[in-house]
Amino acid sequence: MKKQISNLDKLTLSNDFLFKHVMLRKRICKHILEELFHTKIADITYLEAEQTLDVYPDSHGIRLDVRIADDTDTHYNLEMQVKNPVSHTGEFQLPKRTRYYQAMLDTDMLQKGQDYDELSPTYIIFFCLFDFFEDSQRIYTFKRRCLENMEIELADEAAIMFLNTLGTKGDVSPDIQSLFDYINSNTVTSNFTREVADTITEIKNDKKVRDSYMTYEMRMKDIREESLAEGEAKQKLRVAKLMLAKGCYSLQEISELTKLSIKDIEKLEKEMHATEQS
Image (cartoon, rainbow, N blue to C red; front, side, top):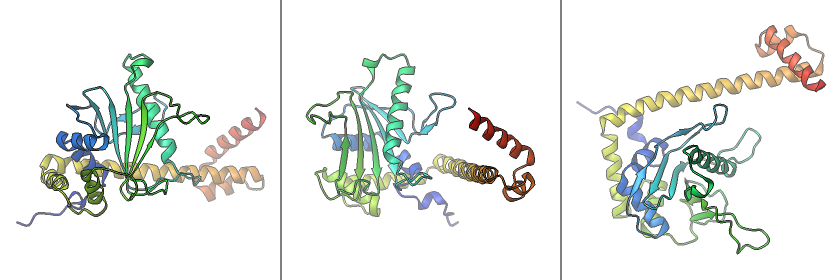
């Protein structure tokens, strides 16, 4: 009987779901960290894989791909970023996204009863399939420094790293370069990427993973539909506000165009008046 091809079979390492499952293989993940930081790591511990942090009930939650701590209690958050996200205002989101990730990670640590001086060193690491800074560096590492004297570093032990898989400048180990090549073209060029490729095959043949991916696909579909519905709702409200502000449209006309109820439009009108008077 011919094996049925699913969407999982078509995935490459650049996919969030597959990236997470590969990084959950300790030998591979530890080796990547050792190669990036040119050091030996005795052991790593997985915190929460694909954890959603909602530090406050009304805060914007973030979904983390892989979160790890090593034997020195240095924390790493590994993320795969295929596209360069842009907000509805046209602003690139990645820089402020990293700022928010760092804040949420730190707040999560403090919730566990730690004092400020007990915050663990952290590295937020993005594998990017694009060159955000357009300087061709293979790795861009950011730490806080004094603008008046760049030799002075704010020793908050927090760093952001962007791994540019398309980069041509700066030195990386042969295994990291082969990993970049594998992410870009799915081509095996080293023993390490052969291990990664074999691991991916093993993962795709795992029934539990295949079942998990079906659930993941349904969840992502629901999120996309909710996001689309939310976007349409915001657009309707924006149009209704513009029409109310002009003052030349009846509530019925606004309702017919936006598909909002008269009751909702009346409520929106009251809110606009209240804002103007405050």
